Image (cartoon, rainbow, N blue to C red):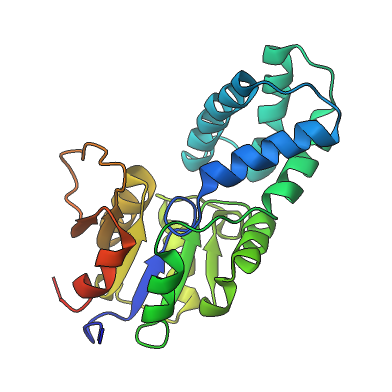
Amino acid sequence: MIHPHPHWQLVLFDLDGTLLDYHVAARRAFEQTFEAFGLPFEPQFHECFVEINNEMWQLYEQGDITPQELRVRRYYILRGKLGLAFEPDAVSESYLALLGRNADLIHYAMPIVKLLHGKVPLGLITNGFTDVQQSRLDVSGLGRFFPHMACSETAGAAKPQPPIFDLAMHQHGLSDPSRVVIVGDSFASDICGGHDYGMATCWFNPHHTQRPAEPQPTWEIESLEALPTLLEEQP
């Protein structure tokens, strides 16, 4: 029987790459969008989009572009690189709607969330778009376990910036970050952001990515299955 240490007032999960498989969902939504618009599709088209998309998200996380710019700019760039004729605004709208219907779970995500639910407060913190993430959360079946979701779009800032962590703390009526654990797969946004905010950090690293020298996460796990046992400890 799992009994998280009473020290912990909140376990704050990242969504994409931690509970939901973003890469599978994004590829499927991208292909479905091209099909819906009658556009030719080749695997390298998605590879090109991923490269552009990663650059755009990095700019967004640095505060250099707005969510609205991110939504559409990537498709203007893609159109230029691929030389295809399509309306970026319309394609973007379709892609996000389709992405919202794709919600593949990371291995062990559902059983671990079910196991922890009712034993320790659970929350979500995500750099995704609010409408898309809420849709994917509901489609996945995870939504009923999370009363609050801190989204960068609502906070006006993305992880690792402090305002989104402020929002998460406010949503749960908390003031002491040292009693919060953030669980996430992104070292730059989840682990660095959580560490700098004063939270305990659990780096979900299923692909065995080389860990940067600093900061040291409180824990590193390759499977979500390991999380409940760790939460019985107080670091």
